[in-house]
Amino acid sequence: MTLTFEFGRQKYNIQAEHATETSDRLILHGAQVHITLPVPIRSYYRHGWQSWSLAAWLDVDFQLPTQKPSRLHPLQIDPLYARHPAPNGSWLGAVRFEGGKVLLLGALDLDTHVALHGQELHGWYEIPRMGHEAGSWEWLVAYGEETSVFKRYADLLGERLGIAPGKPSPRVWCSWYSLYTSINEEVLYRIFDELGDLPLDVLQVDDGWQVSVGDWEANRKFPSGMHALAEKIKSTGRQAGLWLAPLLGVKSSRLFREHPDWFLKDPDRNFVSAGFNWGEPVYALDATHPAVLDWLTDLMKQVRAWGFDYLKLDFLYAGALPGKRHVEMPREAAYRQGLKVMREAMGKDAYFLTCGALIIPSIGLCDALRIGPDVAGTWESYRDAVLLYNPTTPGTKNAIRTTVNRLWLRPLVATDPDVAYFRSQYISMTDEQKRMLQDLALVCNYKATSDLPGWLSADERNSLREFLKSTYSLQQVEPYKFILNGRQVDFSPAMQLPEKPTGLNALLGSIVGWAGNRGWVLKLLNKSITQELK
Ligand code: 9PG
Image (cartoon, rainbow, N blue to C red):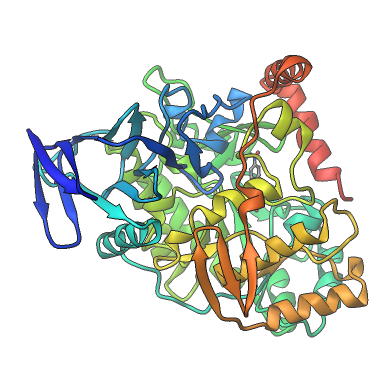
């Protein structure tokens, strides 16, 4: 039915099954809702599906490109909507009018999507739930200042999904953004010693320790084993952290060879692609399969028994890819069930960081959530920003843009902006750019670095120490501007989006996009990334 509501002295026509209104909020009910916007809009807030997907305010005439190469879609966006013709996003959407006021349409449950069709916001539940009464499909409509509108949405999400227990955010050293997969026992043990008395709480071993993606055992580079690795970390007075991608498997893994039936397939019985990484295609476990849930439980218990108390579970989007599941259920509900099982198995006292993770469906189950793409030693790359105009690839500008546009999640979960850099070696960012990333860590209250002690000058080591020790007062003055300890911090320089290439760049972009779909090219790129800083 069509209902009429007034916001900012304008009448809005809304189609929904019904609505309930209180003084500060309007809740719509319906598997499909439509809001006709009576005044011109200036920009649209699109909210990406998983950690690395773009969250940003887009000018109304800005067309987000279909990302290239398409083989990497699962790593960057919700692949189901990769070619959706209208501006769209997961769970919520918002518009900003001339004058600055914002109207937000936000789902209060999973498996939901919002798109903007001209002057109409459309929200829908992907699969009307079995066993759900019509009318329990809920949406918040909120109008007003941007920060207050998003706060109202966060509050309601917290009521429904729960909020993180609010453990103090640990200060983390993570091996990825210096060593990438080139880690080994000897190198790490030396670094752990060299970190000396820097005020760090967790030393987290990232990708590179495992036999294979799917086979989560120490590889030959860790002859003393995982228990010894955790012990070594703990002997320095810190907690041991470990990275895993528990919902992924590559075909060359023992896991895949022994249990191909555990992997997600499409209705034509082909394995569903979870993207391409580590030089090969990657596939997704079906987290509705009881044997998979048992296996995940055992894996989490094993990692805890080795002595790791901080778990960075990565590439989690794999648990929600479209496909035909062992138990038929909406894909994000399946994701949440998988996450819940892993959380229970690791125990509440473990610190649980989700990464490559669906944003809203992770709320209430983890302690911290990565809310942007990976940072890198570069601000942006010619290939990704100019040729491919891709806003989701690893790079500091992309990371800051999406992270800042997701700061409204702070009341719900610890928000991880990825690591900050203090080194000047093996990096091509200006001091201002490095500073922006450090400031973002303070705004997020999540401090991490990957810098190797041997790469830091005495001054840089001192700056890192001060950063780790610092306490601060924070005041938000505009969506992208803060006062941090009396100093103004402005993230606007990271907000601009890559532009559509023209001329030669457009031609080169098509070639690179095409080439990027060939496995051998991606394999070469993967190699160059991991060898970049050796
Ligand atoms: C380890 C890394 C680090 C990092 C994670 C994740 O191909 N990709 O698009 C792609 C995106 C992110 C990514 C790797 C590949 O990084 O965010 O912190 O743990 O995995 O492999």
